[in-house]
Image (cartoon, rainbow over the protein chains, first blue to last red):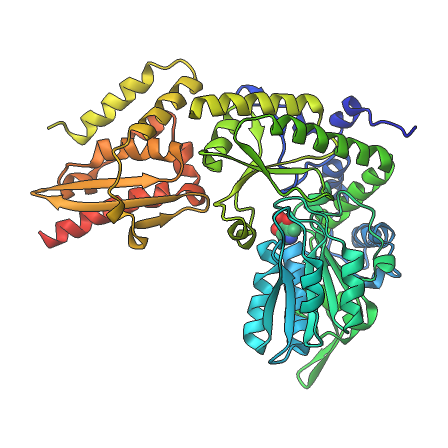
Amino acid sequence: MAEKLDLNLIRKDFPILDQQVNGSPLVYFDNAATTQKPHVVIDALHRYYTQDNANIHRGLHTLAERATTGYELTRTKLKDFLHAPSTDQIIFTSGTTAGINLVAQTYGRANFRAGDVILVSNLEHHSNIVPWQMIAEETGAAVQVIPVDELGVLDMVAYQSLLTDRVKLVAVNHVSNAIGTINPIKQMIDMAHRVGAKILIDGAQSVAHFDIDVQDLGMDFFVFSAHKLFGPTGVGVLYGKRELLESMPPYQGGGEMIKEVSFSGTTYNELPYKFEAGTPNIADVYAFGFALDYLASLPQNAVWEQEKALLDYATEQLSQIDGLRIVGQAPEKIAVVSFVIEGVHPQDIGVLLDKFGVAIRTGHHCAQPLMARYDLVGTCRASFAFYNTKEEIDLFVKALKRCLMMLS
Amino acid sequence: MSTINHTQDELIDEFGLFEDWADKYEYLIDLGKKLLPMSESFKTEENVIKGCQSKVWLHAEKQGDLVVFQADSEAIIVKGMISMLIRVLSNHTPEEIMKADLYFIDQIGMSQHLAQTRSNGLVAMVKQMKNYALAFNALS
Ligand SMILES: Cc1ncc(COP(=O)(O)O)c(C=O)c1O
């Protein structure tokens, strides 16, 4: 039998969880928006600014050396975390959104032509739609959409038929932020490659829940945000296949990304620095490394078990509420429950739950095309992390029932 | 005819009766439910004020010297807020509306709903009510 998580101990690692909000103990169920940070991350930020702060890669002094080592150490940890072949293929960005825009503006601009197709899915976050629409508009390529069924599962037959040789790139999320569906990315990657298309996987919602092996999965690009993985805001990661990253033109110009600059011409630095113009977010990258260490110190199976238990329990408890319908009932889901209640606007539920100290997310979850697909103005979304408890679900369900009484 | 500030003070007194937030919100929800229905013909695209999560519709017309507002929302708590704003601002002259300082919202502890600028369209609604007053004033 696998180890179980000691939640009392784990919750102590996340100081923010222990507080009262509007007079009730905080119940934080908005982990898909951003996760909370363990002590080790907060301490690392403090330590960096009290002991090590300097600009990296250019100074010869001791602090510059320490800061550079700390920053680069996180890159090495990420190489292991993603099972990437080398640190050169780990590029720091400011987040998932920035990573997708980088690929659209460099790879996309260099490779898309009029008549080409970029395939996205109906499940995408706006971040994985709009950058493609922008580059499509510039290049004359078209954005086409893989449909999703009633349960929230992508239609793989439609995907197969959309995959013509005009498709240059497929951009899909690993996990849907709005309804939690886990997409069969291994299969989708293989299918894209069979017609010669490249594929970008938006891992914003998956990195906190799965072990990702980019070499085994074989995607061309993988992007995610540190803040959804218990790390600081303002840091993201772009992994790419070496030959693609090398062939891509730089994104932004400036310091760090150059080899030599003269007015007769400039040569660019090697990977990964070619894509890291300017002073990066050193402190947060450094602190992010500690989030990765923290995760590695947890028994992975026990984390999965805990998340699965939370999902099952929340689904069971919520299903008993009259008029409540769970939106997104894919057989493969992460610990996210999106729901609507007949006759009640999601915003009213969000406002009142907050008064009970319960933080959930309401609205369209930056996935308006998905809401339109289900003819909804929005949903209420409770999203869990391993530090959440069944007792919190009880508090949430009790508060939700009170809200519904108030609204009826 | 009571003044804008008189109505605001009445609302502050009414809310002063409640001990806890739940009673306050139940009252607000009740106000939302009792909001006079807006005629469907005014629920046009032009009258929509889009919040990120819920829509507000606002219609204004001049009746004699006074501006009369009608409004609606998809969300009931926002409707409660609308009901109070209409009670305070409707049936006043453009000049009175333009000058109004809406202090009651803060005093009844509901400023949170005006802080959520993007989510519910209420801030934009207040601005729009004043814009109508400004426009009617310029016409007269
Ligand atoms: C699936 C998905 N993609 C992209 C993003 C955008 O991430 P960020 O805002 O960190 O760039 C999010 C965040 O909500 C997401 O859930």
